[in-house]
Length: 141
Image 1 (tube, rainbow, N blue to C red):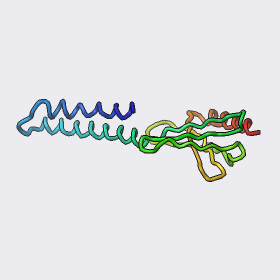
Image 2 (cartoon, one colour):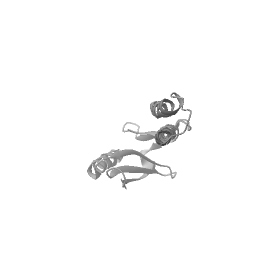
Image 3 (tube, helix red, strand yellow):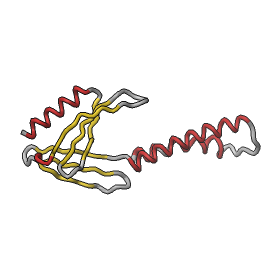
Image 4 (cartoon, rainbow, N blue to C red):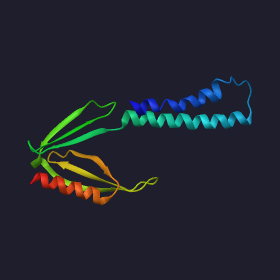
């Protein structure tokens, strides 16, 4: 919800630059303000899309019941909860994410017996991902 509301802020620029002043004629200055306003609208639309389609997910490991619960939802997807036993976890893989505009991150991909997979975690270093993977493997034994 916060990201959606944050998407409303850039829409102030077109209002303040184009609508509120009440421009009556065309000028090069107005063209410059129009380009800035288009950029602000695009930024707002990006935040709206992130709020609507961004996935919120949680993976809970319960040592006592030897179960794993994967809960996930998005604005347009209702909350879904899948529960697995430790035996149904078929693999844990370390995954590398190379981004064009930020540093490389690492994640853990969990795959279950029914084919369902989840990648809820992101780490700055491979060592962090491998350390957590080792802890989870120790839980399974």
